[in-house]
Image (cartoon, rainbow over all chains, first blue to last red):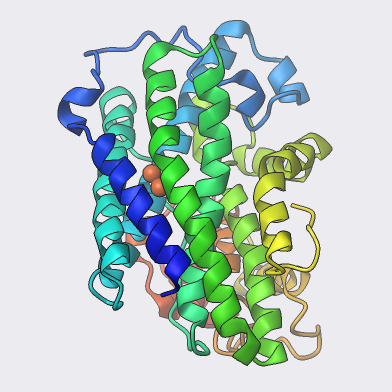
Length: 287
Length: 84
Ligand SMILES: [Fe+2]
Ligand SMILES: [Fe+2]
């Protein structure tokens, strides 16, 4: 590991210790929630601005904001679960004590987040929406698997953060949801910093040795991973729970709509710009 | 109700629109989709949605094994073949 990663890891560890909290008392979960509330910003709702959206009453839109939040929190649970698996595998697996120290905090914080997201879903929706993402084993060039693991973390956390920041700042959003979003953003700021440094470093270390096909494959993977990550924000289960007609067609129609494409471009811009700056991707792509 | 051939053909057309790595004449019902990287694991999520839509029901992803997506034949027999 390079010196700058050690340095960053050390700083982040100090910050994590300073911000350490007990997840079981940190956020209070009331027994019940009034669904006549905004659980997220209306603009973050998948079908926002569509004719289906226009046809809903204010009350239905708020109920939809609840299920969209359950989906957002569910996808966080799934993402954090595989993140924890990957991070655990990396504990004591490098010769940098500072990085190992920081991974302990990373794991600690992701486990806390999962508790918040999972508790919200189980307590108020009685479920976590299931995951449709399957990753099959394959072979990798040297450093490729490591790089792709951190790319997945990067894409997942960067997009989530856009939603966290937007909902946390929005005064229309009910207090508990704002608090979960704000708390997540606070911890994630450190993870994002770590993720960015490590990605840049891994790419600089390994990509010069990759074949043209490997590099092209990695770039293709990044694009696909963005797409797949975004797909999870358009979940037919939400529409089924809302009783909307033709939920699967609504998913494809919404996903392909200009409005949704613009939204994805906005929410992905900062992270794509970073990848481009590091020359990990050649050009920003359409999502 | 669609016949076996019809369902497999719908799946075949879906693969053709999603993957640029195979041509119409190359893609058979028993062509290996993952080994040949015609489909990446990332395509599979979309494929699951497609199958759910065709069947009109959700299925439990916990029971899905990698072999299920080997070919159009295996997708068919796993999800449409035997009565649930
Ligand atoms: Fe998290
Ligand atoms: Fe995180």
